[in-house]
Length: 191
Picture 1: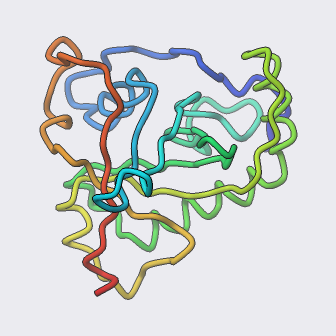
Picture 2: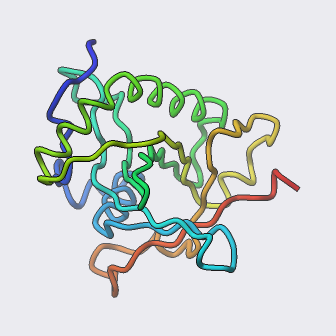
């Protein structure tokens, strides 16, 4: 399949807002996207935190496909770094090395089409943008990382978990506020 050149489904809710009962990852992805912002809490000092504005979910990277080669969540920070976010459930059986290969594959494709994404962004948001760096995140509940071997980590990827794991189980109707979702860096491997 050829790399996509346009129509990256930016800022669009597509598919079902409330996926099937057993599609946990899709429900969580949609909920995070509807919040529109996430904050990466890197330290107690809030100046070291990074706020991301989400602008796409399940962003397709290839032409004429309905599934696969889609980035779960895509956003940018205040200095216009582009973030590719791969979302995993806490009970996901996929090993970390496979998830790392998956997001690194997405990065390779995005590097080749980033100009197309920027053009689509301008067409959708009426705002020209030039992304600086491409950054990668694996986002999962803390228990997912605790089951993984730390020898597999790739230091070009940030490993984040939810500040409040209850977000995973809350329904859309139970969301009381739509403020940014707080995430933390999983640091246990770096000690």
